[in-house]
Length: 292
Ligand SMILES: [Zn+2]
Image 1: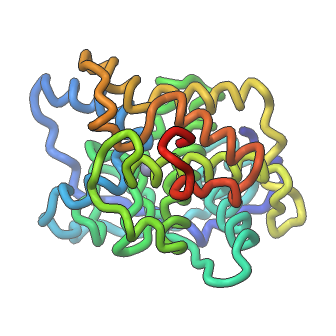
Image 2: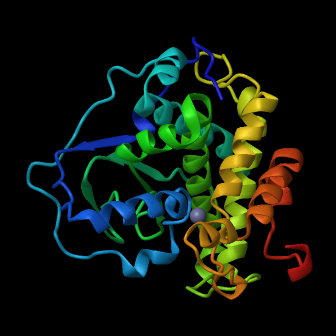
């Protein structure tokens, strides 16, 4: 997905932190963990592991918030990963505000390097992107974006980055509607966890469809219409992060009882549902197990 060059970006919706303590790097095994984590945590590290997040550490004394002076237009967003996140956040915020007649509030979006502190514990690259309901904020490690680019290529990488943000924003929407609060740590093919994750995929699809008609403060739409190739990239990204695909990649037997995010087929299908029918079609909690 590409921004219109002259779209104007309001960067106040994203916070950039620098100078957090660098996560300790261990021996060779850690690399394997990170590589494996990449697939599972593209959209998988969010929410459910929150109770297991590393606690303690506190925020670093050196950590500081850095302004986004270089991100002003869609052209900047097309060039720079952090500006792209700021632009996508602006677009998501405008889109979702429009979906609610009342009660909408924006999530915090924190871009960090190394580690930072959240109300759900310490965030680090090993945990991957996640949404913390306790402070209603999305945490994204910027190094992760480079990993996405290497995994999905230049075009697919940009879209995958925005897909991650749109998915996490979807968790915030489920939090506002109260559905997130009803889900615990259960797993299984038709568990609340899977329904919540598929809902976030559906919400992401709804935004992708609407993104080219969502306008920035300059009156220009944020994004150009999504191309068939980009849509195929999104489907590919959704496929790679299905629980079955992740288990197979890890050399495990596919076990639906341990699913927390849904299968590759489900994740693609719910993204498509949102893309074709909009956010109102995303009530994954009301469908029967066989329709999930
Ligand atoms: Zn998720």
